[in-house]
Image (cartoon, rainbow, N blue to C red; front, side, top):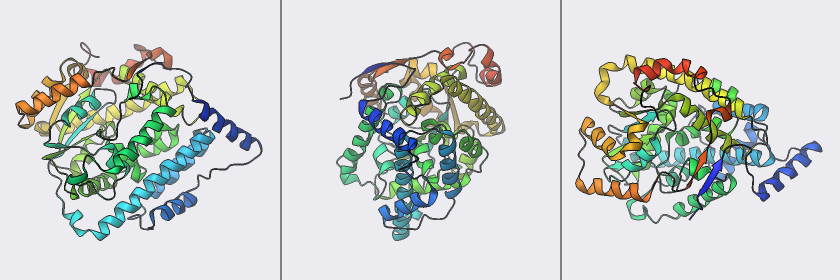
Length: 422
């Protein structure tokens, strides 16, 4: 069991082994040596060799990959460990794409799988989405992609090995290594091999994912991504869900979650027209400070250059843009109000089970006493500070709670967040 930690944001703590690896990298750079290649061709060849296949299912991922690598090289100021992380991250996602494509070619039934009325949790990050997602997973009618099956998707999970598949242990080892590499991360964002995974992890197989800018400072990549047509990525996501349920592990509905959907609701509904959407809300200033803290902690694993004020400004500017787009879409979609359920973080924190009850009633989902009991037991076992806590203030990131609120005011007023924000 991981030790609970109380973390104060600031200069990232690095284990001794990380310091050694990075010192070797600095020495190599001083000698003009660059031991870890991050060019497109070498990484693609590396993935092909590892997967034993060369069919990526099209080249739609290549521009995103190319943009990400260029941004990582020119902007992320990677240490040797950071370069190793990018190499492994890219390779693993390319391998998964190759394996998924090959499996689908060999199993015609996958394409016939129906994805019916999935439930998407969208909204700003750090708004109670993770606990809500985990709580909904206690209902056996619901089905979420788990960390281990996104990390190792081929072959698809089966009912017989759902709790004993050796890939569960493999993925938990990877996550445990991350927790050692980034002390305190578990206090910010609990993760586990058998916990629900976010959609951004699937999007990353297309290299069209905001997850990349959280882990690495790649602002030009993110600026490019914000202007792209994401429909092909959502189509890939749908194919992934078909693959995941084709092994026989099925529920009554998929439950999916990511802040990446926030400004793409119309695209989501184009691909999943019968989707149900839970939109979570919180004071954006507090969101930006919390995400900045998370981002600083994660990026600290791959670079020695952490500018807290730069990270704070990135979050303010980026989320203001995405919130504006989201609000425009919600207004255009008012005629589909039955497909939306809005909830404030303060409500989720105060009484998450009441939120579930109201959500189920809104979407006409049955909620049994047995499922409620499972959800209550889960909440007792998983308290908010189970893995420790981390402390920070908006000012740590150069965020002025009053001055920087103006770009978000329309959103705050529209969803009534001014009086009871959390």
